[in-house]
Image (tube, rainbow, N blue to C red; front, top):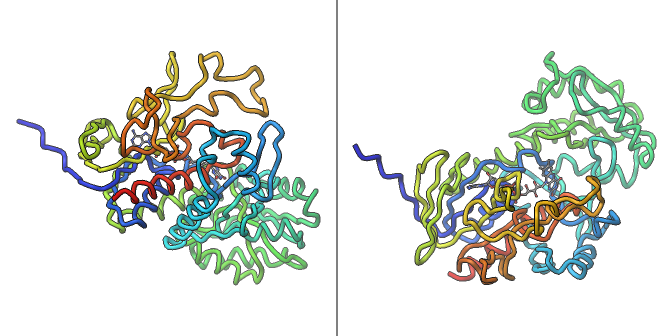
Length: 426
Ligand SMILES: Cc1cc2nc3c(=O)[nH]c(=O)nc-3n(C[C@H](O)[C@H](O)[C@H](O)COP(=O)(O)OP(=O)(O)OC[C@H]3O[C@@H](n4cnc5c(N)ncnc54)[C@H](O)[C@@H]3O)c2cc1C
């Protein structure tokens, strides 16, 4: 008996990877009227805080923090001409953020920020994080940090890794008058994991119980901070209802990963992709690619091909080591789908410097793909490896997103540029 032929999907664009860069590329391609196929596992985004950084730190060795990310980008482009941001203009970056946050708003995830200025949010250890676009649930923290009104930080009995007392103590240096309280979680359940807590707070009954328990602690307070567990699927409604019940602004503080903030984005995104007619292959990988005249033929599946995707163009958004776009080997780092050349330190011994916590980072933290000005990855001859293959997000060479605080911005802006280039060639 012969094995059945896997079903075939013909599309304009195949997006390989469903981390933030893949999500952004797919959303932007749909916006441009392209037919899209999308394959990948969640990647880093499941662990992410939901905050969209543009650029907060430069140069990393000095840990200099910037209020104005565009001034930081100008300095970065001058100092690091090989950084992917150096290929992008301010209007393109602004358009990328505008397009992606508009898309997130359409799928129920509202974002806020200042024009041309970084916002500030509280971290789970009580320090301040500079970021560019902030989920609606965390937005009131920016006002709180700037104006320092009397506020209350809440945590729940049994919830690990989040201490309102510690946050109030650490943040008390710049936000005096922060009070804290620990409450039993409403509904009589132990508050152990963020996901069931967030689901429980989507119930008005539980929110009312929480508001009653909080009421004696709110005297003289003007805002309340919670761990980021205010809903998963109905965050807009949960936030509005709790704000109404408490009669004051409410803000979320990111929790340590894995957090519901990443899950919120993944759940809303996956639902939207299916609804928008994208050929989705969630929890599947691109197992093999054949370049053909007019595009690519790709086998998609988990252990064996389950579908064939034929696409005029492809966007490689497979991330670095965590996403498995780059794979470390004895003789060096390889790119996992196309076997493209990887910019990397000359030998394994040069991957890391002598000091683990070297503020300047390590050579391996900047490994990745070099591209031309249109984000097409280069082959060994220094030319675009394929006419219609693009590389976006953290797989690119020349950045250190964890230290530069630029992870999401890089994903959005490079995806935007790649999709615009591809769409413009129709
Ligand atoms: C704990 C944590 C916290 C973060 N917090 C922030 C933050 O506060 N602000 C911010 O701006 N950024 C943050 N980020 C960073 C942001 O999430 C990353 O910049 C971003 O996830 C990088 O995205 P990426 O899509 O390039 O790669 P990844 O997220 O790694 O995604 C790679 C994708 O490629 C897929 N893939 C790999 N191989 C294949 C294949 N053969 N076929 C199909 N798919 C494949 C993977 O399954 C995955 O879907 C955080 C990240 C982490 C881990």
